[in-house]
Length: 490
Image 1 (cartoon, rainbow, N blue to C red):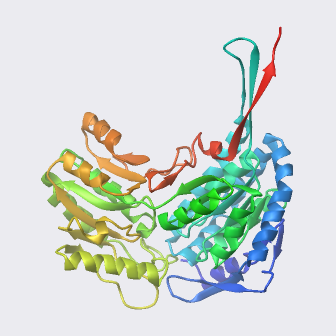
Image 2 (image 1 turned 60 degrees about the horizontal axis):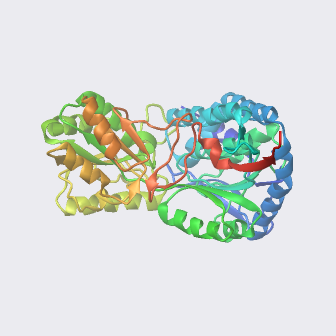
C-alpha cells in the first residue's frame, strides 16, 4: 500500500502548466482547473487551463518545429523514442501511482498500462527506420516512377481519460517516428499522466515544439480554431462517437487526415462447445479490465442455451468475489468509476434493465460513501430492447442474454451501429472462422478476452471509427506518399 507521503511526492513532481514550444507555462489568462481523485471526490491538484490564444500558440510552436523533426534522421527519431521507452520503465512506479490517483484504476493495473504504453514507443522506434519508398519502370518503359513517404505534417491529438498514458503513446509514438510535430489535448479528468509523459519525452531529447500539451476544460473553444486553421494536417481522436462526428465535420473544413477510434458495443459470444472455464476467464478480462471503462469492454453477452446456466453461475461467482476499493489499497481489484456522471449512467442502465424484466445475479446497487464506486454486476434475462444492449455501459456490468443458435448470437452481435470488437468462444474451428468473417467489427477476440497489442492494428468499422493505430499499418496514418515521374530515354 502506498503512503500519503508517496502520493504527495508524486503529485508535487508533476508539472502542472501547459507545455508549449518545449517550455512549461501558465495559461495566458491565468486560468486553472481542478483534478479530482475519483475514489474520494477530493481535489488532488490544479493544472493550467488553456485558452484559445494558448491553443494558437501551441499550433505556432508545432508548425515551427515541423521542418526540423521532418528533416531529423530516422535513426535519431528512433533513438528518442527508445530513450523514452527506457525512461517509462525507470519511472513506472511513480507513473502508475499518478495514474491511479487521477483515474482510479488499481495500482497493479496502472503498472500494466505503463508497460503497455511503453511498447508503443519501442514498436515505433523500430518502425521509424523502416519507412521506405519505391522505384519502378512504367508499363510502357518510357517513364520511371519514384515514390517517397513523407510526414503528413502537424498532428492534433485528443485523448480520453480511461487509458491516460497508452492512448497518448499510441498516437505520439508513430507521429515522432514519421517526423510529425504534434499538439495533444488530454482529457480534463486525467491530465497529470500526460504532463508527466511530456517531461519524459523532453528528457529523452525530443526537440521543443515537437510535442505540445494543452489542458483545456473548454475543448471546443480551444481545439476548433486549431483544426480549422490549416497549419495542422491531421487529427487523431479517441473518444465517443458523437464527439468524433463533430471533429470530423471540423476536419473537413481543411480536409485534414482523420483517424477516429470511437465508441464500442462489443458482444461476447459463448457457444455450446466452448470451454466454459476459459470463457469465464476471458469474460473477466474483456469485461473487467479498467472497471469496464474501455471501448473494447464486452458490453453484451450472448450465451448459447446449453452452457448458459454454468457460464452465468461461474461468472457471477468470479465477479462477486472481486474486491472494490481505492486503487492504492492492497488486494483491490475494482476501483471507482471516473466521476459521478459515469456512475449515474451505469446506475440508470441497470435500473432500466431490471424495470423491464432483467434479474440481478450479483451486484446491481451502487454503494454509499465517498467516491464513485459501482459493484461488479451480472444481469440475466436482459430484454433485447434494454438500453444495456444498445448503449456503451462503461462500467462493471455484464448483461447476459441466452440464445438458441450461433446464428442468433451473430445476428444480435451485428445489430448495432458500432463495430469495434467482438469476442467469440468456441472449439469448432470452422464455426470460429465463419463467425469471425461475418461479425461486423474491426477486431475479433477468438478464445481470448484481450485484443489490444501495440504490434496489431487497432480500430473499428461502421460508427466505431476510421483508420488503424498500432501494428505495421499504424505509421501509415502519419505519412503521405509522393510520386515523382521521371522521364527516361535510355
